[in-house]
Length: 331
Image (tube, rainbow, N blue to C red; front, side, top):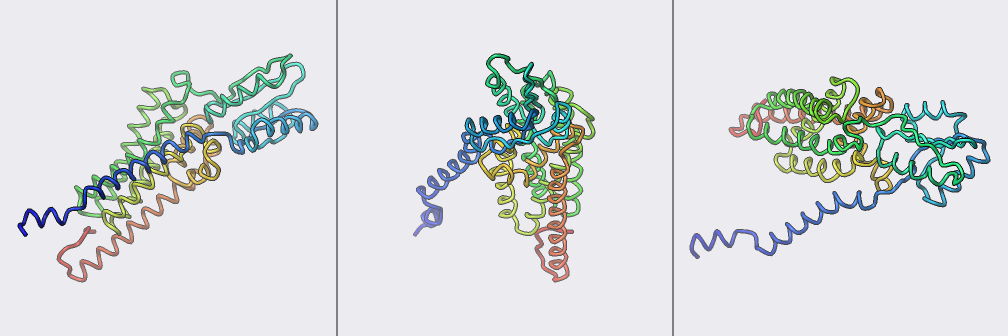
């Protein structure tokens, strides 16, 4: 058998390659299209102001119109409802004033839910159409929140790109970690400037917003660096796949976690893109209210990345002390 024939024999079959690529395309479509195609309200927390009898009627009406769609909390008055919205305890409120019904929304907390609540306003009282008040609106330059909705993918790509490029170009593990931290800072400042000063998608303190972005990029990139340090290309690829196929579509940035298929919205908040998006909304529009759990998740991923990198450094030292000629990464 000639050398050319032997080489061709060792190559994977054309059918196997085609089937593998078909499976990859199918997974990509499911990951990105399924959450959007099944988008609907699921236990969306809202407040209702009114007598107990009227509140019960609203609950029954909402359950009949959208089963399982809303989690209703009764509050004393409009001021209490507004406070809960600003604290991110609820997405909106219904004020059942006989003279002038009102629906309070917060488009900055989730434009899709704000739009849904605004539609409910037309059904409250045919005789007295409900007034719609956006308590925490999105910026005038980006009234649909498009910039923030599109922000999950750059966060993921930034983290993956950082880990991949540093892995290919830098041999020292310590320098890789320093590079990842440095790029997280510069990337956070750059993306924050674009979103806040050019696109007008953010409000609040620029450095606080940029800090959230930097923390998100660092959490992703250091975790992927640690996985590559320990498991090589397979570890980097598996980590990147989780962030792209799960973290990005389940982040809830385009709608809200409560609009995603049951259970998956909560799962997405346990990954860096979802937690980063929630923290960005809270810091930019709600003075940090409701960001506590998101920062815990981001900090946990950052700690995990540092831990994995530490294990990788210990492994590299064992290679050096064992006098192996080839080491995957130097300390």
